[in-house]
Amino acid sequence: MNKKTIGAIIVMLLLVLGIGGYYFYQKQPNQELSPSETPTPSNQVIVGGDRDEHGCIGSAGYSWCEPKNKCLRIWEEACYISAQQEIQYRLAQKYSKPVSGVTLKVNKETPDYMAGSVSFAAQGLPSPGEGGMFLAAKEGNMWTLVYDGNGSIDCNAIKQNYNFPKEMLTGFCD
Image (cartoon, rainbow, N blue to C red; front, side):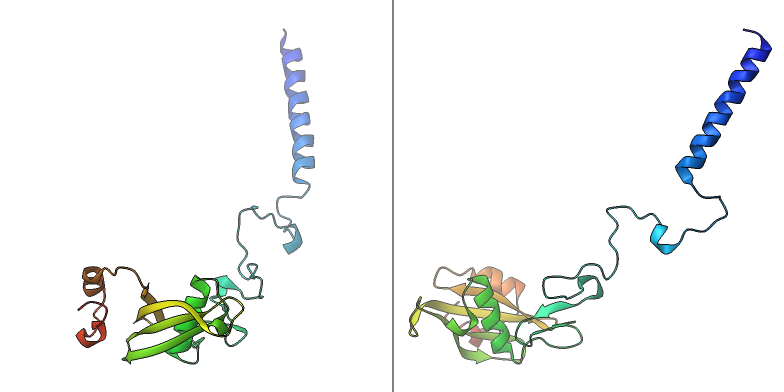
């Protein structure tokens, strides 16, 4: 091939690349894109675009509070009226029971610990059915179920991981 042919091929390639680049980008380099034209990756989470089924925005720290029937930030406002209500809701959720069918009897309580018994209304009956004991500890501003049921209890783990008052473990870990 002679120099003229090679030159013509290079010019044609540059022309094809130039036209292709123009159609690919369809904008001048210095022209700004409008917000609706700004490309976003499909896996990018848009802050505020993560509303749950109740309309709460998780990325802003909001979660659904059933007792108060609203979205809230738990570090700004307590969801439950009392510690007993919070434990009742946690047990209802854990065992897929209606809250109205969960009855708590608190035997011992301090600001950070709670011990007592729980009973669940029998299916379709207003009277108590199954149930057992429970231990709960406050971690931060939320209550955690440490133990619930009638089975064996790992007293060593509870004593190592939680600082329950000794008198509160009477009946659980004698």
